[in-house]
Image (cartoon, rainbow, N blue to C red; front, side):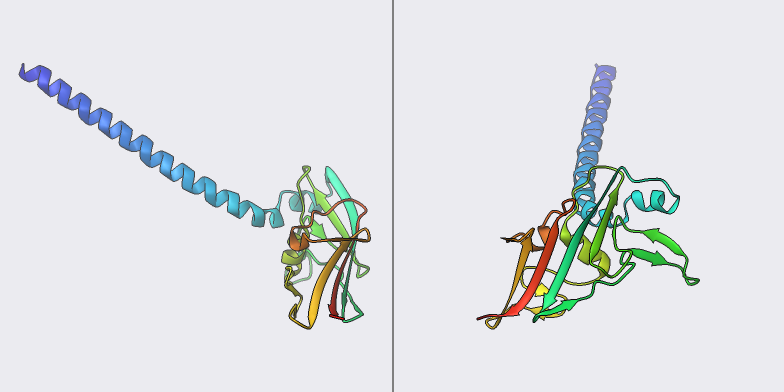
Length: 177
């Protein structure tokens, strides 16, 4: 009887240990999975296309769109080389998947997969603020508003606006009438 009880006790301990390991592993996996989902939005800013672009490999998806920003009826220049990270010697070491080459407002989107790019990603890369209530250093209030148009049609998606090939996006900060 003593040997049978020892085997049963050992089996219970092993079963409880295995169950504990499975539960802990599941909790760990669920937590890291949630973190990586929230981090994936920011990881887009440094996706694999950046490596490829610097090594001369063509992106799977490459398209352009136009972005114009007007603050109190004055056009704001979007600088050239937004999205280029350079070393101390001025050499490009990293190219973001959303970038500019000149100051015309033409935005380039280059990805290795058909990823959804949002307008807010471009502003994150640029290091400027853009939301429904703020554009650059200007905030909407009782006297001022921010409106966004895509291809001439007013939209309400602001930083969540999906960047589409050959679209024309206009952001206007103006005094209310």
